[in-house]
Image 1 (cartoon, rainbow, N blue to C red):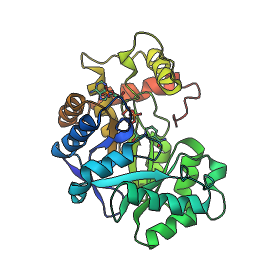
Image 2 (image 1 turned 180 degrees about the vertical axis):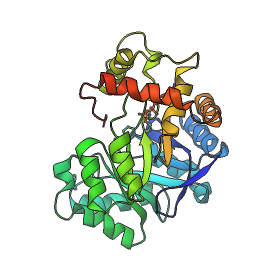
Image 3 (image 1 turned 120 degrees about the vertical axis):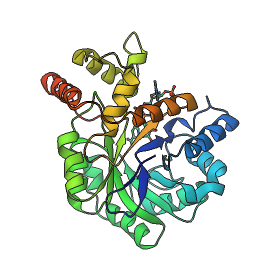
Length: 293
Ligand SMILES: NC(=O)c1ccc[n+]([C@@H]2O[C@H](COP(=O)([O-])OP(=O)(O)OC[C@H]3O[C@@H](n4cnc5c(N)ncnc54)[C@H](OP(=O)(O)O)[C@@H]3O)[C@@H](O)[C@H]2O)c1
């Protein structure tokens, strides 16, 4: 799998990464989670993205992949979830990094994101500095921001972050000409989250979950012609080849879907007239379709 620089962080990431959001759920047994995580690395994927909010995801990665730590770039998030400490305070950032080091059984975290805090939180005195201090202390290689819209654009402008993570998919193109392009222009790494748009084509009726339901609505409004290809292949090939995207982190519980996504990646970018049709459909239907956090 192709490796790309994650901006100027010095980290090299596989073009297809793994979003471990589903790894921490009880629907996967411990042995299934272990098999999935090992399968990710065995497939040549070297970026794993997790967060303290993803159930047992951090613990499971630490437990099952500690012996293979040199084989992957480890990305997590912070800002909340430290017992006894108020969320989104400098102390929560500092202790959150230490908590992640311990859960993930590692001496250094490659990328640590602020996990989608709103703009006013991002502007709190001392917050960004706490993450920068963790970088200076050698606990974190790259400080990053995960989020969308105005807060993403503010984060890019601070100059404090080496990478960003933001939604990029068929149904969520707001960041492509803005945050993604601006981050690329500043030499920052860009991690595309939700690259399949949570795969709404799997549902005949609008799903209840807010994000999936919104993407389902957008999919219907766009009424894209997939040109005889499977939706998942179109979605993957679109997101993975957006200019400026360093890696796209598909989330899956199934190795068969992971392998399918790898095969789609190997097909290369979609034809340029297809990409233009997808971009054009979004522009024509965009009724305030902001990035999904
Ligand atoms: N605010 C944030 O920071 C934030 C927010 C959202 C996501 N993220 C990150 O981005 C990662 C990915 O996002 P996501 O999981 O929400 O969205 P996604 O990757 O766009 O979609 C994941 C969904 O697509 C399905 N899927 C995967 N491959 C498929 C295929 N080939 N065919 C059909 N369905 C397929 C998965 O189901 P199966 O399990 O059945 O394969 C899963 O339900 C997360 O794990 C997380 O790391 C971050």
